[in-house]
Each structure stands twice: as C-alpha cells, then as structure tokens.
Image (cartoon, helix red, strand yellow):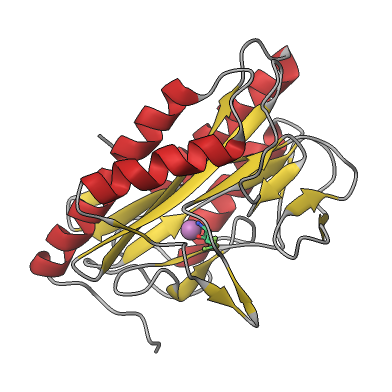
Length: 254
Ligand code: MF3
Ligand code: CO
C-alpha cells in the first residue's frame, strides 16, 4: 500500500524523548514572548535550551530543493503562515507569533508548533488562535485505528470553516520518525474516508494552518516565509502523535 513505517515501542520511546524537548522548549518560549523581543532572540534561546537537554535542532541544516534552512525555529508573525525566518524584527503588542520547532534525539524526530499572542490582541485574533488549536485537536481525535488519513483532514477543515476561517491547502502535515518528513501527507482539508488506513504505531505530525481571510499563500523573496496573499492573519498549531490501540497519544505535550 505505501511506504508508511510503523514504529516499534523502542522507536516511539525515542520519539517521545525528542518530543518532550519540543514541548518543553515551546512552553519556555511562550514565556519569552513579549513586546520588544526579537525573533532572533527567541531562536537563540530555543537552540541553547534544546542543546542543553541533549537534543539537536531538527530544522537547522534542513534542505528543501536547493535551499538550506539555517535556524532552530520558524517564527511566523501575523500574516506569515509558516517558515518565517528569525531576524532582528522586534515583536509588538497585538502581534500573533507562530513558533515551530523540531528536535532530534538518538536519530528520532519530534515536531510541534504553537501560535501565541504578544500582549493584548484583538478578539478576532484570539478567536483565530482558539479555533486553530481546537481544529488540531478535532483532527487528532480522528487519529484512531481503522480510520483513514482524510478523516483527520476533514475534521480539521470542518471546524475551521464553521468559524468562517479558511484552511491553508498549500502545506500539509506529515508522517515523522527517523526523518522530519515521512509518508503519508496529512492535508488539513478533504472528504472523509480517503487515503491510507491508520494503524497502531503510525506517527504523524498534524499541523493545521488557518487564515482569517482567504486560503491562498505567497512566498516572500527570502525564499522561505509563506504569507497570506490577502494579508490576513494566520495561525498554526502542530503536534506529533502516535496512533495506538488505545487511541491517539500526543507526544509533544508536557
Ligand atoms: N515544522 C515544519 C514542517 O513540518 C517546518 C520545517 S521546515 C524547515 O514542515 F525548513 F524549517 F525545517
Ligand atoms: Co511539521
């Protein structure tokens, strides 16, 4: 059927260790976010934190086509959807900031993202964050043995669109394990009942990206940052999970 690798308990233990560092660094970063802090400062904080815990930043050195990513974090501010590059830009009150991080421990990967408010944000922005995180959990709830991949996708889409937001279709979630990106792709949209069947030992990174306006994205000339075409705000939440006979288990949660 596919190249989807089921992980052994020993492999899942290693992914859990990587994922724990991911969860810890995101929790620590949440408290570093405030007006005036630069996205490069957040990146340096995250790298030090991960290395001190025996992990390796997974995105640093990651290659897509002919480009190499040079940072520990992806930091995506406001209309940035994903893959924002850390820089000297200082966060401002009212911004929302997506923090995406991967860690490798003993050759196994964990990957997660959160989007957090900088100080006080508008009610609509707060709602975007809430609905996006909820849509992640609606998707995770479908990650049960016997369901298919698109049952996850469909649950995410239905929840985001019921709130009159749109899901990004230009990027997808993914299998994860000995590589950051493995099969299968996990879209955030689609009809239910399609795609590979979920089995115990499948490890997935589920990662809805939800826009306040239209779903289309564009790339900045930095070669990485994806932004909304219409300039509307975008939120991103991600967890690494394992499908088990007892249901989905979130590895990137404290
Ligand atoms: N977490 C993202 C993903 O799952 C970011 C990786 S892109 C990188 O695709 F280049 F920054 F590594
Ligand atoms: Co990911």
